[in-house]
Length: 179
Image (tube, rainbow, N blue to C red; front, side):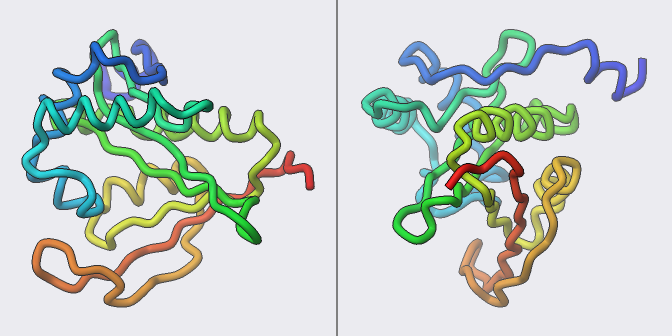
């Protein structure tokens, strides 16, 4: 069976976070390789306490904007969006990560596709942005497969892993936006 066939025969679902997800989240998130590709606000090491704080923070919001990614009934990662404010209120920034044991299965690609469908249904956002460290080739591929285009490069815009890194700005426009 090819990788493409494996992808077609699998189930990828976005679900609201639940406190029962905390141990599995801590297990997949406590990974230096993941930390090297995300913002520093992502804890390293990633503990059960960190997972509970993350889930608790999102359970207290009135509208879910962050979701657990489930792959064949296993927690595989996290995905969400942050609505921007004021004159940027038509923009949502997305972010995601997949546990290392789930890499290479196109889970992130499908999860981003599903998140975009959820965002599109709101008819509230026209521009979707994603900021990616230049060395994060896997994330670049996920965004390309979902129709994002490279809008620009923020040169030496981040210090990550003790080195200056370029940040890539990826953008997708949604068509059913209502002012």
